Length: 229
Image (cartoon, rainbow, N blue to C red; front, side):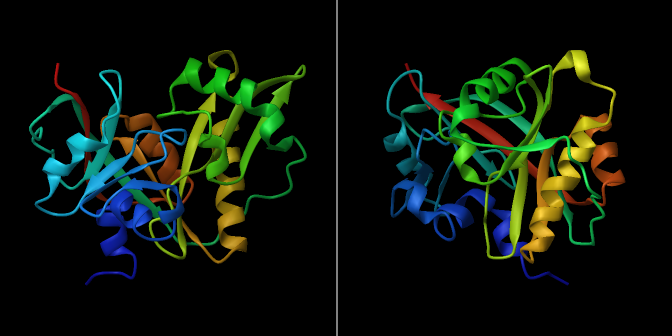
């Protein structure tokens, strides 16, 4: 039996760029990519993968495709990486509790957010990634040491938790779990479910997500394309 968001979550990038986040989409109608300032995600209509080559701006550009299977490089492109992802979904209630340590992050925090993201690599990060939706952080000694936010909105009522990262010097204190709960609580307050992706071999992260109420929905595959040289 399929649930209400299954079609969207099967192809989250395509669903987001042709649906709730269409204002961020460039290209079309056979293939779309998100505004590069937000990141490298892209998707093509079934059988129209050749159109992806036209979305690559230069030799250093990348397209990240999140699908149910690996994508064969269309003419003019090359596959630089393929990785399996665990896609997890949480629909139950969230008890985040009051947490005065969390601060809402905005434009003034972009340099610190970018520094933390580039140091910890929670996923693709661009100059506008923070604009996807609310991001929250923890500061210690005036320095941003952890954050979490959201990214893809493939359908009304379901939002991706993303950008979760903690400075290595501050790991092991439960900051990531607390921040994720905070983001999830915001989703529930808006009547939304939460989903996320983890590399399938990251057992520690998957165990954390399970403890927060996420259940395994299935595997996706990310294929990273670049321009053929």
